[in-house]
Amino acid sequence: MSIKNTVFYRGKKSISVNFSAEEISSDGSLVLLEKLERKHKVIRYFSTFLPDYRHPLRVSHSVEKLLKQRVFMLMQGYEDANDVAHLQHDPLYKDILEGNLASQPTISRFENSLDKHAIFNLCYGWIDRYVSSLKGRKRIIIDIDGTDDPTHGKQQLAMFNGYYGQFMYNELFFHDGDTGQIIVPVLRPGNSHSNKWYVSILRRIITRIRETYPSMKIIIRADSGFSSAPFYKLADDHHLKYAIGLPSNEVLKRRVKRAARAVKHLYQSKGEKHQHFISFDYKAGSWHKPQQCYSKIESTGLGMNIRHIVSNLEEQDAREIYFGFYVKRGEASENRIKEVKNMCFSDRLSNHGFWANFFRLLISSLAYELFLILKSNIQNTSFEKAKKWQISSIRTHLLKIGATIKITKRRVYYRLSKAFVHQNLLIELLSG
Image (cartoon, rainbow, N blue to C red; front, side, top):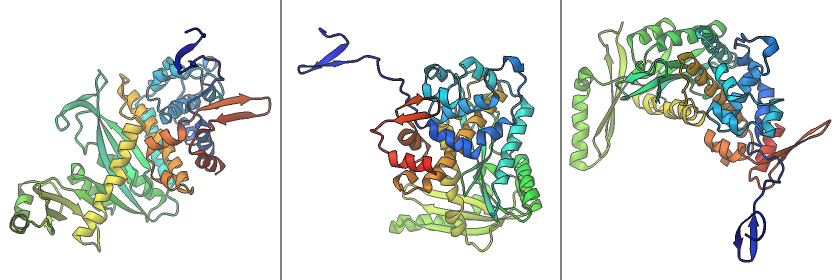
């Protein structure tokens, strides 16, 4: 180590390290996120629903700025409020937020400042924003699904769920099956059944939609956990179409027994995998009238796979309803929930208070909505490979780029890495 700062030698060449470079940020595409927000004003819209009880003379950061900081941090991959400790000297964040970043205690107080009424107002605002986006559409698909969020502390209403076998929160999502938009996200206590609250929430969504678009055709799609008597009554009252999974029971097993025996025999005798559909009227004891039931009986080579759905979709046979419509909820809903949960960090509900964690779910969903706008913009570019990216790929390949900033009296220069692979894509998005 004869030369100062030498860490090792490569042959006769010394390799040195020091900290004399300019301030470099790893989040160079913050400027793209800022442009999206300036154009669509999503964060500004939701910030109008946030109450602010602080003394005006003691406020350093507006609620809009706090919400923007939290959402942009999530989009860049910083999942916790205390990650701000790593970003407090980041020059790009300081420029975008037009001042110093809010500290972790300030962010935590912000997340804990909302009560039940404020959360409800945010949810209604979320639905209203979705309804305002429906202009020109004649049909929508509402996908309903839930997901588990394991908890590891003493969060309020984090309870044991026997189905999942863990202490958890139960998150519920209403998605647009065509666009991927979140119609509204809901946080429920951990011991909630899949269909808890969803019919009453769906009624509110339908009412808001029909107030503005009375002739809108609405189709509901969900798995067997959401099949219930109140839903079928709601569907009749509001003229809804639907395809809903139906959990198996002894009555249904008897109805498909003959067909299942034939499919099983075909595989055992000839080694042929086969799918067979049957349809019949079925009425559970709590239902107000019989429904049309469709059953898929399939030999997979590993055993029998029997599924039931209830649907009132017209002019389609059982196979078309199942494969042409029902199973598409996997991409339209389940994969979108994975993005919110795993890539926008809605599983990081570690505040103590229930309503603070509900707010965290809304913030993660807001980050997802901005990513959805970014995805839509990418679809309008000429970069075919990028059109297949999910949120984690967008973050890795597009948002995480080294950059420096130079500020003069009249201009702000963002100088990004010359080695950035997707320069042309970023330029096209910034130009749009």
